[in-house]
Length: 253
Image (cartoon, rainbow, N blue to C red; front, side):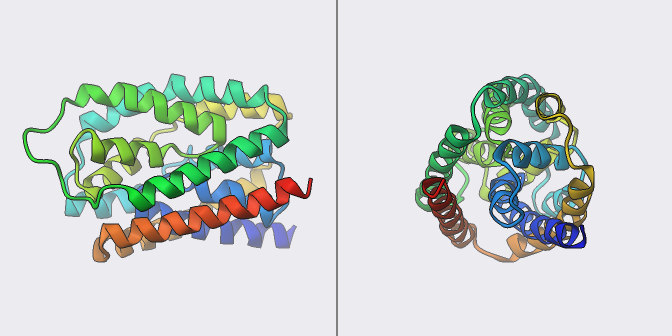
């Protein structure tokens, strides 16, 4: 049990570091690490990840971003509102899929994320008036659906659309994404996972959450001092490596 706790803290630290640096929920790192390092099943790994994100563990990172670029709280609230039904629908779809096909879909999703972060915009804000905050509703629904389906925080979707469609700078989008995940918006998805799997490992979740809290603050400090393009490309390489590792495990059965 000590090894599991230590592994959970290590997973949380790394996920929190990347969450703070890139404005994502950290699930895109937590799910592969829980599966590969701790041997947690795909459904359980996704449920644990969503449950960890119920706590406001990204608050230190949000405050760091807010000092750089004030967060548009109304936009964040509308994204969170759309996220709730989206995460429930995504989790329902995931619970109906066997573990192996679900992992294959997750590998494809990781490859897309790696490509998108490598070729994405450099982070310069779009000229002109800001887009309406009402766009946050459909961004939240889409991000919530992917979060429920793959057990990720949905931040990679939020940041992508906030930068490319709403004209936010990279730092503004990352701060908004982390602010969206402060309330327990993934609760519908967690409930579906817990019901379908007969409960979740609360001890492991606590260890991961503890590590995440420290890592997220450190990651936000790194993001404040690093060019967003360099961070995005490094993250793209990391996600591609995670996809390759999961694909190898999938091929080996």
